[in-house]
Length: 527
Image (cartoon, rainbow, N blue to C red):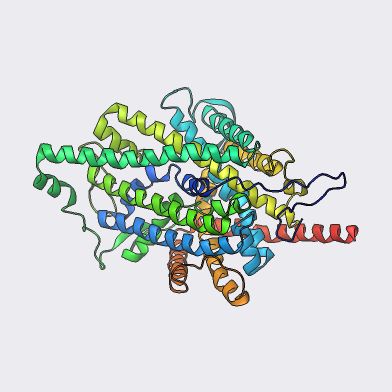
């Protein structure tokens, strides 16, 4: 086993070959992981809450444009690191090599504790809730085993608790999906990639269908009421509330005072929703050891996957505003249908199809979200296990996790450890809170990784770089400035989303010291 945690073809004591990663994924499969991990349920929901905070169609589109610009720059920057170090573990490896093993561990620790597993749990339970559209017995209120209700507990700027712990039919459906997909992925990377290819293709078609149905519905409406009337109805207030000097009310913390802020600040505040909806594009880097010609296919998959998804996201929001225009005053708006409010459940994509197709539209959208959730869970299960495997190979995680199956050449133990913790989060009811807490931490690790790009250009100038980051150093620097601004705004105005994330990361420091000490003791004994 080499320093980077990649198993080489060596001969074992019994004369057999040591298991090694199989490069079973091409460009299409790698791109499917990028797109499949990005598209969960966020794009179908978060624009409603964003619009209430922004109070302006123009600002809603601007917020998504900021997300698109940042994500594309991030993907183009990661492309250089991925081509330079095509190893299992991806971002964990980049942070380890650029900034040191502590930073790599803190990322892997937070990823395992909540970023990856918490996202899988949340998307899985979302799958269960939307399954209830077709099977009413599947519901978060239909308890099989209700252990306790934890009341809300104010802790400084945070509010902890306010959750039910136990097994209901919704999280049971999530657990069944998670366990089943974990089992499928233990059969080999080609099996996991095949599932990902099918469901990613289906969910991208579903997103495209939302756009097409919305455009057709809008065209038909224009024919009915006249283009001029329709334009005035939908777009005459497009720039309302978007002035540089317009102030927007936002609440500080979970239950703090309401303050007035400017355009740049309010757009930064709502990035919690849009950046999270566009997150997980980096998951493909975790699987670098199993991608054919990774020096070419990794950067390409990042560019293609991120570009296509973000283009669809922008089009979806254009359709939301066309079919379900914002109404009301700035800061108090909701996305409305023609005379019908859908803001209470925030299911704007469902509202588009229901507006266009009637009640059957809601079921079609629920089916599309089921497909999106299923594919998202599979992609994140497949990718996440490779990070914990790489950590184990560095002596920073359970030793058994750092082994590949002799039959399937995948980290089976890592998959099952990830599965077990994810199922616990499904039962705990805390995954939603945890996800809110780590949005800030995720952004911090993106910044650190792109800082690592600058560091490696200086410390390893002669390293082989099959692809060099487009626009370096200007675009990566712009990303860092934008992300640091957003982090600063969130620290000031949304402390409930920031300080808990920092605490979760910092808890990893003593854990790292324990793993490091244990590793040193093992090295001494082996010597």
